[in-house]
Amino acid sequence: QVHFVESGGGLVQPGGSLRLSCVVSGFNFDFGTIGWFRQTPGKQHEGVSCMSKKDGATWHADSVKGRLTMSADYAKSTVYLQMNSLKPEDTAVYYCATVGAYGCSAYVMSTFGNMDYWGKGTLVTVSA
Image (cartoon, rainbow, N blue to C red; front, side, top):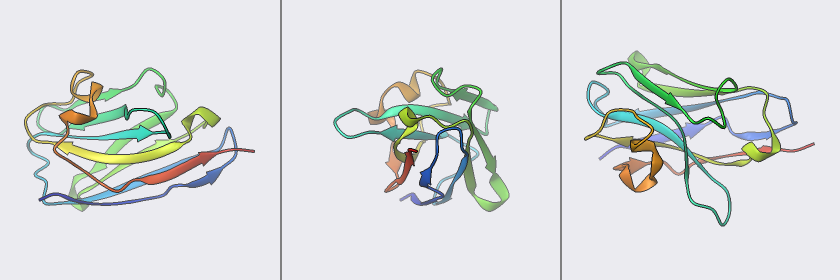
């Protein structure tokens, strides 16, 4: 069983920054993929970014490239999502999620159902 502790969400003005953190336990970073999804009310989960340690692959959605960046501190079993130049449309609940069978790719992040485990999420609100 994989467990997540997500933090860092909050209210920020447009153009501002936040850093989300996700501490993971029970997941072997040497295999599989860890990523961030987001969801707004009434919409499906949207893949934001992912990374896999085994092959060094990373992926970011076109909508966030250049503004949101995922990184990891494997010694701390923690992944981060640095969020800069935030826009109101970035408002969502952000979820940390893992999958053991696939490497990081646009395909694996296209569907939340591809993930094996996920956290409870942290709310990011971008508003003036």
